Length: 165
Image (tube, rainbow, N blue to C red; front, side, top):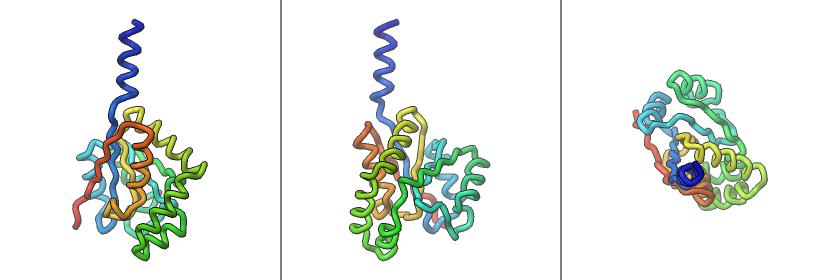
């Protein structure tokens, strides 16, 4: 009992997990759902500070309902969202500035607690996907969230690209 249990538990703790990311810019909810299903995602983690959108289906309550209909859970970790100054920088195309602002935000107590919640979810074997607006993961803070999680645990990141209409 001793060695086999310890060994298998240890292997589980050291397993490399996959975290997906996805942006919904320019796509329909159905394309996002299809990409999530294809990737085997069971929980969509919304990392927008403000889970509102003018795009049909992407405001928090609509998004949750659409995902639940597809058998995918929804979790909003608002503390992993970009603060207003970072959103303004991103909107203006100043991605480096947005990254600096977000990295400062991510060092805060609330963001670190939310990152810990994400870590527990992923470490437990849940196939999760970070969602934000930006289609290009290199311009979005969700990549910074994934990188920060990768510093805490063994992780592979898969950037999903939903089909454009």
